[in-house]
View 1: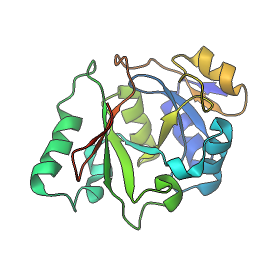
View 2: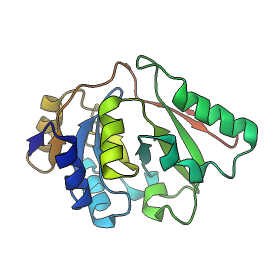
View 3: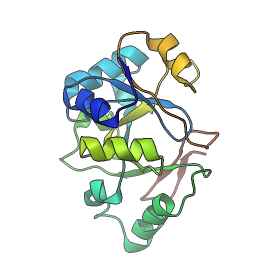
Length: 189
């Protein structure tokens, strides 16, 4: 199914389906992070090991604020600023945050932190809002292949195995940078 309706796409997520959708720079695969069956389907499609973990994508700071509580105030401000002060052409930032018991262990993989990004991409923001929470966000490609940058590339990878929310990519040329919120270390430049 290919749709341009955010409401239909959010319903797919709520029904435990895998959804492909455009993000800031590349197409992503997403699902309800609390639905283990849907999550395992993403891993199967990507041929990705569970140990690697995935990113959670939020449409608004309020959806992830509970994950910022254990950060020192200076770092918390830095994380929030990176999400709220970016322009559509800037590269998005994903932060590794202390995980909590509310985050399923299949999301973090072998790590004790959870990767989180609050997006400024209008379609992703609307999707997270319609879903009423954050969603899984991992690049739409089988392991070892380049991330899809169009609906056509995504459907060539996955055919009719999932649902698609058609729309435009953001203006970023690269996937999000990944930083550790506790140490400040750059994980992906």
